[in-house]
Structure formats: C-alpha cells, structure tokens
Length: 454
Image (cartoon, rainbow, N blue to C red; front, side, top):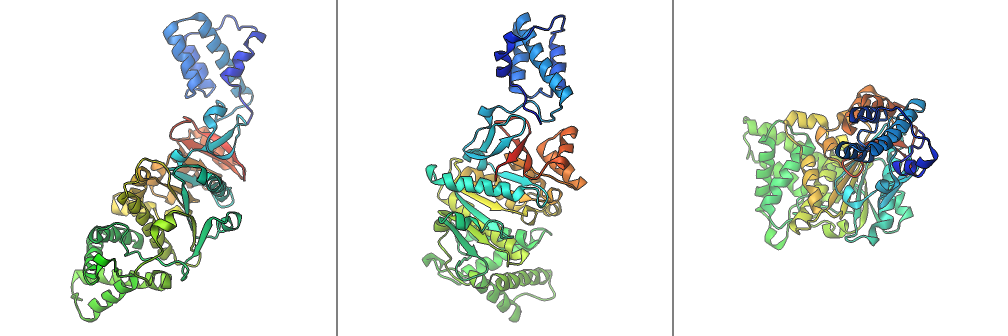
C-alpha cells in the first residue's frame, strides 16, 4: 500500500498545479468522487463537502474537486482498500504498537481505550501473540508513570508470556497447580458472604458448562449458604473448595438428597465437577485464606496454567477475574481509568458462542466485561477461531485487531466483527505475518492496516 496525500499536503502544493477546468463541481459530483476515492468517512472530506454545501463558494468547490480527483485517481492507479491515509496526529497513543501501512505514522492505544476492552483475532502464527506481547511490554514500561498505575493479570495457558518475567523483574509468576500460590474461591472479595455465594454459584455453573437453566445454579447457591453457616465467617474463617467437596460427600453418604429425585441428578453433576476441580487445582485451593487479592492486583502477574485441565483453567480464570472486579466495585474505585488489564488467549474457552446460544442469555463473563470498565478493569482477549467466540464479546470491544485468517468461516466472521466491506474483507487472507487490520470504536472512524513492531 502506498502513502496517500493528506489534504494539508495537497494545499501546500496547490500553487504548483494548474487548476482543472470544465470540471463539474456540484455537490453530487463531489460525493461521487469521494466514493470513488473511498473517502466518504474521512473527516477532512466531510468538512470539505459541508463547506461546499453551506457556502456555495465556487473556489472552495474547485479545491474540493481537485483534492478528491487526485485521491480518486490514486485509487485507480494504485488501489488502497483502506484509503484515505490515517493522519499521524489521530494515530498517536500512549502505548505504541506499530506503523500504519498507508501513511507510515506510528499508531498507539491509550489507557482509556484499553479499559474499554481489546479483541485480537488471527490464525496461529499470524502475529497475534506478538501483538499482545508488544502491548503488554509497552504497558509494563509505562505503568508506573501513570496514575493510577495499571497492572496486568495474564492467564497463560500455552506458556506464551512467561518470558516477560525475565525481561521485567517487577512481574510475578505463579504456576498452577502448586503451593507457591494459594487461592480460595470461597473467600469473598466483598463483606457479604451471602451475596458472594450467589455470584460464585453463577460463575461455577457457567464455567462448569451447566446451561440447562437455573436448577444447578440454585442448588450450588443453597449448598454454599449451608456450608458458610458452618463457619465463623464473621471472624473471616471461610470454607475452601475441599470443604465443599467433603460437604457434598456427606450429603450423599447420609442420603440428605433423595436419589429418586430430580435434584439428585443435578447434585451428582455438581459433585463431579467439584471433585474434578479439587483434583486438578490441588494444594492451590486447599486453604481458608489465599494470597491477599489486593496485593496480587497491585502487581503485574502471570498465572501459568499449561498443566491445568481445561475446565480448571476456565474456572480459575473466570472466578479470579470476577473476584477482581467485585473487589474494585466494593471499594467504589470508579472513573474508567485503567487499573487492571486481564489478558487471556483462546477466549472461546471462557466465552464460547454455543454457551450464549444454549442459555439464550448473556454469559457471566460477558457481564463482567460489560461493567468491569466502569471500575477500571479492562480485558485483552485473543482468539484464533472467531466463529466460535460469543457475539457479545465481539460487539463490546473498543479496539479490534484482525491478523491473517484462512478459513472461510473465520474470515467472514472477522470481517463482520470489524465492519469491513466485501473488498476489505478479501485482504484478511492476504495479510503478511505481523500485519493486522485495526478497527476502533472511536478516534479513528475507519479500519486501517498496521504493521506491528515486535
């Protein structure tokens, strides 16, 4: 893609060119030229057309014609599906990510944009992980210069991000399962145990894949309340996941649930999932008090979970993120300023499309994303199979990056997510490694191609 001339560059060279004569400069003709130049959404072009409409000044109309004619001619000679060129001033941001292809200017994201969530799509090997790491490194290096200082919480299932620990000594690394990090999902991040039991029941049902209605969630809620009553929660003594396992075993052994009832069928499913989580997470969850949540949220942290089963990965990630958001909410840390950036790849594990279709409702994770922004919690999610990802996450992210895709279904789904026209959608297959199509909800009103800088 070649660099396009901006209107400022055109004006600087205007006196060196002879005016075109005999040209139609009606508003409809100018609008047609703007369409031919693919510049209908460009703010400069919109301003020129408004000026022609309101002033009816022939000289302004002639200037607009010459500018649009030049852009349209460039489109014929050397087409750019992402014209017009992105201006350097509108592209600049606090965390630099790379170079805009059709203008050569540096593009970066801002903290307030990260707080509104970021989606990165792309096949394996397309540069998706490199882009995420570039963003994380930029945020780590600049974090202590910002107020409040944002921190990253990376949930790493493929060991893609653990090298950040060697590059930045202020980044913590916890490997799960293990005894170096202790965590109790039943330890409330808010003062009210009953309220947390209701929240945790929803998270558990979601992460465990119970999509058949409220029966399971209601039962989990009841069992949690019964368990909490057996502990002195007023003195902050809480049961753990192993205690929940033992309590369910006791209910089963002493026939507290009628095996002939519908409830028992749901009971067995809950019991099996709790047993599985205890086995997978082991000593990590065998505690009344885990690592202080406020302290973890106050540091850059990577949770390496490659050895965990998939259901345990999903449960830990979703529950920990929910605890973090409610921790911020309880302290009324409002304002939309980024304090925590939750990062996870393979987002379909947390927000699969079929989950929302089965529930016919927005999932718990999508709800967490929706109101996390207000309390300074942003999410950066990656996915190689966008067609399997829930629609709610694709529609709620401020920043969307699409790297190369080869599957027809994924190309079509990515194009819809970024609002690309049919011609622009064809470029998804042609992107080189490290190139990505970017779409922002604001600031830059049109998609553009970015070469990510490692």
